[in-house]
Length: 443
Length: 111
Image (tube, rainbow over all chains, first blue to last red; front, side, top):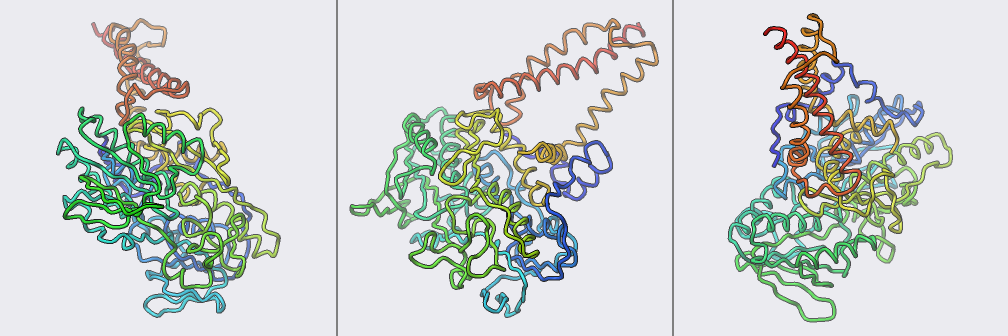
């Protein structure tokens, strides 16, 4: 397995860009797309969150807004390439491949406030930080990402991951992803036992990740030469494995072929990590208890608390309650037209992936500028999202779809319904550079 | 995806490998320049190295390129996979010929 063997992998991004410019070979290719005309706008834009969506918008808006003050709010000193965490948790990547400095990605001229928003007050065009500081704005972009609700699973604590108790979770963080891989190694080293893999009862980011973790673990079990010594079970709260019918059926069939027992309408309720026992609530029946040697926990997810307590969230009874209220095509909040959303925080089907952010950023940039110019909003998000569905370590399917599960392949020559080595290479070698190009607003 | 977008992604993908690309360019140019100063041209007589190494590298690449990407030849499945793999292997074999052919020429002339 590749373990970051080349020293330039650890050289800072800015130095690499300088080196690239110095070679002058391919430099012109890195020019921006420049699809939106720059405008003069003496306004204050506040972006909450310096993840994929926030950083991408900071870069895009700093290029198209002349005279604007842009403030980005986030506490995180490090930026994580989260789509790489499944590779870390599968033992394919070192965790260092997914970690860069937040400061490296923020354009000069953007103010970085290292704080966390405690309260949104859109009626008064301000956000209030946890330290009491108030930030007024003319335009607000909410790009906070989502909140992982491990605490909703009784007995679950992310500190259990890596303690040799057989608990793993790719979502908890990059360190936990690496420890998840270690827990899987320990399980395999025990030469037997049961692994439980789960989906949450809520919307989730990178909805393919729980499946990828199952498939890559199956790869590792098969590579041990003793696959028959291990039981693998997969629990679904909804009875579905994937939102798009074709892939739902594909994964079901593949699970059958690979000896994975599926338990539909089971939701992880509690863990007893010392006894290695999980309790599930089962739709229409009594709770069920399962012993395990390894369990991959996927937590319920919601918008962050600060947003849930604000007028910016969908209310009970509305679609996508517990998520930010936006028009799914324009990404504008219908109640507060100077408030916009991007990324995982928004209430819409699927669309909680970096690939979605790539498309949303283009739409948001165009609509944001049009709104400042008092023009009709020209761009509409088509619901594009993408998931290179790893079906084994070394092959994958390029799953790309929009609203209603309509397939939206980017490359006419890649069959979205076939497993492919090329797609694996794209996932392993090219999507991280593509992500960084997106962060800088280049694609 | 647009052509500009694809080229931008390729450029970002190439950045960690610029040192290797530069090294390969040097390894290509040095024997070429030295040999051409001594009358070398592409149709000149090479040697055993330039005759046997490129096909060997082509065959080895078919097995090693998937391994280098944490995969295996067994997962090379679609026609796109095969074109990509054969293209990469042919490219490496051609590069080997471009390096070894002038080196063999120089050895022949030295002898």
